[in-house]
Image (cartoon, rainbow, N blue to C red):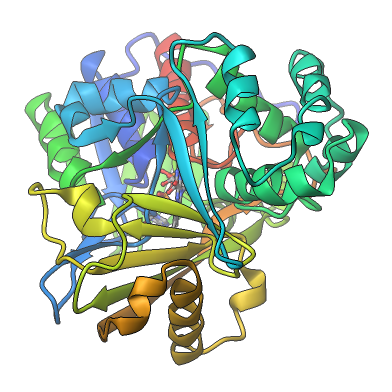
Length: 448
Ligand SMILES: Cc1cc2nc3c(=O)[nH]c(=O)nc-3n(C[C@H](O)[C@H](O)[C@H](O)COP(=O)(O)OP(=O)(O)OC[C@H]3O[C@@H](n4cnc5c(N)ncnc54)[C@H](O)[C@@H]3O)c2cc1C
């Protein structure tokens, strides 16, 4: 593209968005609000991308493709949900609290009191957190002091925690679970900048930004129809079952081909699909650098083992697990209450950044999950497993090796924009990253 220049007309209004996950939907609603003519093309028959739910055919319960947690500091996600009328279906804790169970039988609670400012709330929380010793706490000051620093792009979480003097006990009980859950990467590979960003958002932004939230319905029930209706009511079009095969930008428009043979000419295009899918759509020669970068993204899996016991085996809505392979257990009937279908005794156990589980069969994973649950909730030993379902999201998120620069919203072509949790939002790949990227892409279109 070197040497070519493009000029855009003043009446550019037709925008095609490819991908109906949070990023594409966020871009669509913002552009609809601005009066643009929006068409959203989604490959699958349903919207939601990596966030969806379905009805389990055996139990009739609503099962998510994986439990998703939000934080109170997810400001753009909450804005998105508010706009489409779904905000009330996300429930937040009244204060940050995680209950932990250890394989050795220990039970601990980490709670940051809402009435105390940062860092007093952290101090109070860790002093009462039995999984660490008070001597582990003073080095946390170093982390707090580093939150404002511009960390090196190549710095891993592991190296950063070492540099900040975090002791093994604090790492096992807090930092490692946090890194794996929030970044879906192990500390040895994860970017310290992403962990720093999570901590900044959670603790230095709005008060109580760390409070956890969850949907009180299945994920599809939360936003799929509402987002579709929002877009349709404002004149936008949502087309599911339409897989895009190529995006070819030209000086005056962008030409999109679909698998079913459509040729769509549009003024602007936002590609809100995962990086490896995008790499297949664009010309490797025209977008040489971008294409090369897209091909370097590495997927990271999340396993969810859904277990239906014949009786309730825990009371907590969720629990972090220490000293086990599975990292979390979610009590679905407590999380849903009366708002969606979940039998008593329906639990979801989760392991993130779980490359080490890829070789295991479903039966082995179910067996492992039951054994670990017996350790942490002995009551479950008397209960019978009626049904089990394993979901492996192989590419739950993906990340670049730290030496690569993360692609930005604007591509080398002025009519083609990128959105998705993997683009440069400063955040790790999360719902909030996806929504911010979608809004940013829409804003970039609006500026043209
Ligand atoms: C099991 C699991 C647990 C997670 N837990 C959390 C959590 O607790 N908190 C959190 O914040 N985040 C969590 N995440 C991450 C979160 O789900 C993602 O960051 C977010 O959904 C990404 O949205 P997106 O729009 O960027 O991408 P996607 O959701 O992947 O959307 C991309 C869309 O593009 C479509 N598409 C692809 N190719 C084409 C094509 N050729 N033509 C047309 N359409 C196409 C796809 O079908 C998809 O709908 C989790 C993810 C998983 C899988």
